[in-house]
Length: 181
Image 1 (cartoon, rainbow, N blue to C red):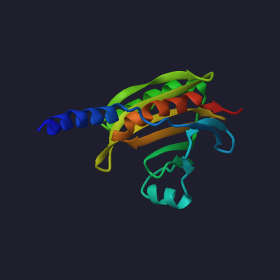
Image 2 (spheres, rainbow, N blue to C red):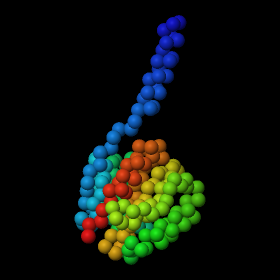
Image 3 (cartoon, rainbow, N blue to C red):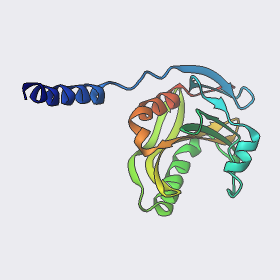
Image 4 (cartoon, one colour):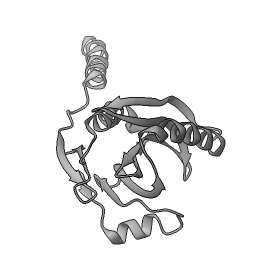
């Protein structure tokens, strides 16, 4: 009987220690993307998604990202270099418009933050939310700015259960953004 009484607290302690264990450190590596236009940190192990996979994933989408880095579909970082004209004076306007559009389109979304901040001497707008997608919740950290007179949108996404692991990483990625030229 004494053994049974000791096993329960020991098991509880083991479960608590495992739950309290910090997430594995994610190493970030510097990459140049979009024909060297941008320098940014990307999680080590993320690879460029193949053209075939992008075609499949965005078959029904109106717009497809220029490039997507992913770690086997668990999380992804996409870059959409648009044809929309943009400059530093327009970043606040883009933020206001995107916030209004996302708020209307995803009424059930949970908002964590949004705004415009300076990153390496440039204005960068951002939206951070959890939105429904294909029957489940997806964490989205979207940031955008101008690069060579055009709007660049970067979107980090992962499943809702992975938000604790990736939230700070997505913000570090934004904080590393540098436009070349």
